[in-house]
Length: 122
Image (cartoon, helix red, strand yellow):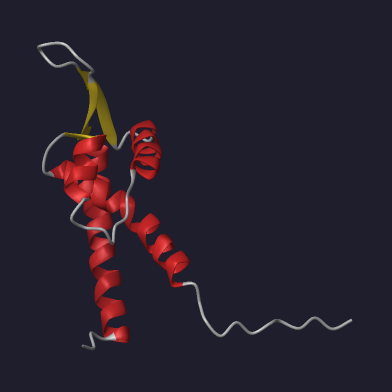
């Protein structure tokens, strides 16, 4: 029995972009927390003008939970002085800062190598 692969003339660019975003989300969050503590909403607001990163509340909170479990970030609940709903504020831990340094170095090498291959045609 022979199996033939069906040629697909177009690729799903949206799926490809989704995979890029997943790979970069942790780096983006750690880099933002390196500039100061933020809530999940604060992180989303900081990324709002960067739609290519594509983090939403449905994706950022699972990421924050994982990073907290792994010890890369620490979360602390804060309640407004006047009362009201509290929010969890996340900050980078020493382990997270070390991970960020390694990730930045890896990202720079990856970006430079890929740019050399792909080029920046305009």
